[in-house]
Length: 338
Image (cartoon, rainbow, N blue to C red; front, side, top):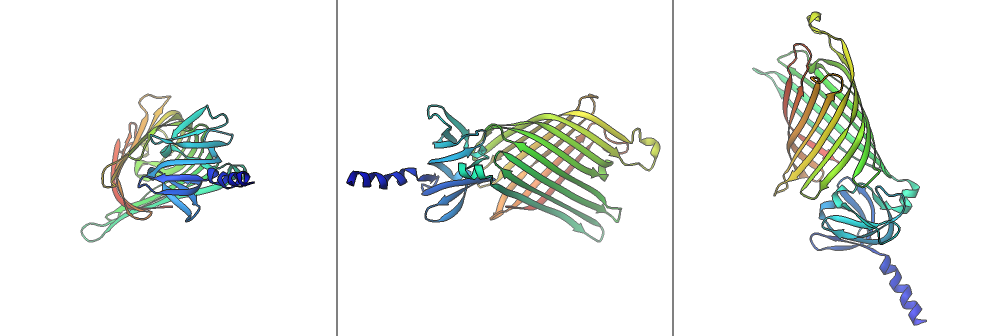
């Protein structure tokens, strides 16, 4: 009887999950889900905690979990060199994925029930002046991501309005919907639809449908690099200039090759550098291509509040008549993330 009682006591302890942080703290509990850059951990003593993934040194749990790219339950077997080691089925067939690349990690029971999570951000910047210089310029950007199992819904939008010296304001807006499917730990398939207009560049309306795959080359607490490659269908309607004879075509529709890159690197002191770009290269006319890049620095001001200095650079190799081939914009703004 004493032997049976001893087994009954030790069994629950063996099933408990443990997370170890980079500062040496060890917290018992279980992983609940991934929310952006954080792992939500249900602590036995402190309740629900949100732990940044770059603070996780070690993680073990005997509880079945759902991990991206696997349909069956998986068991976490620790972390080695920032790689989460796990197995699904036979323990002899272990797998690994960078902790920071992990997009889906939740109890398998929650996966069966189908739990949805929401993350997002909101960014605002502007400039106003009067007197010798009259300027009124504002830009609002927002994004929300709804994650359920291996599928992610992304909704994003931008609205910008600028006026100088009492001139008619020029408006730029865009809206995006993307459905991403994480069919492997590092691979995902994206399908996106973008609607928008840009009066400054002579676009009365623009529609872009894109589809392709993405891959995460590496992702650590200091640096990350990912790339997307696919096809896009572009439909554009142009504004009529003051001299209509300058407009050769009122619209254009064509297929294009799409390539995008996303890179970041964190310097000492918590200042991070980021760079992303997107290339749309027409499959019908070699000289028709568009390149958009965004580079900058960001740093946290308060919890969930960030400051950002960003430089956007666009090149349209075949712009509309009277429009410049390239545009450069520098902005300083504040972001809120949830």
